[in-house]
Image (cartoon, rainbow, N blue to C red; front, side, top):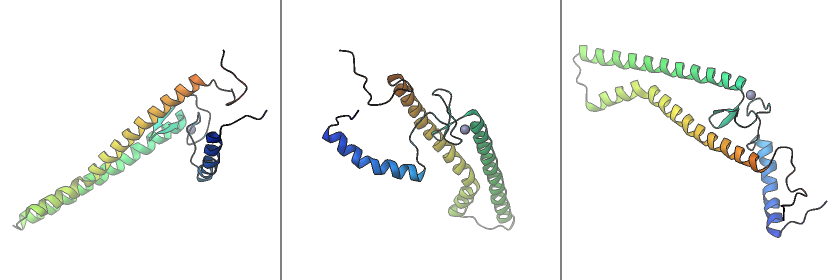
Length: 160
Ligand SMILES: [Zn+2]
């Protein structure tokens, strides 16, 4: 059965159709009830959220290991840079070199850089998880309006 669409709807579909094709080709998928990494079906409310990606239990465990590894690497960098900065500071003090404010600030920035990057990364992840959580809530609201398995734009008519 053909459906009568308004001019606005037809124009909207004509404009967005190439975009949908482009997103599909680029691998950008809309929010749906699948794991974003392994694409197994993932009902609403059961997903783990990481950087606004919906993940199943297995992928979430993998992601947690990756994040833990990255945090360990950055902590290692942090310890190394603090060691190097401390070594330079002690050497300068032992050789009675005068350190200016810029030198001290540079050493402090060098020592703390990995921690600042780590802090920024974790903050960014939290922001994206907040976005993912609202996406999850939107999906839940959508699925409450449209039961699964029902076709959009079908013959369903509202009760009069
Ligand atoms: Zn998965």
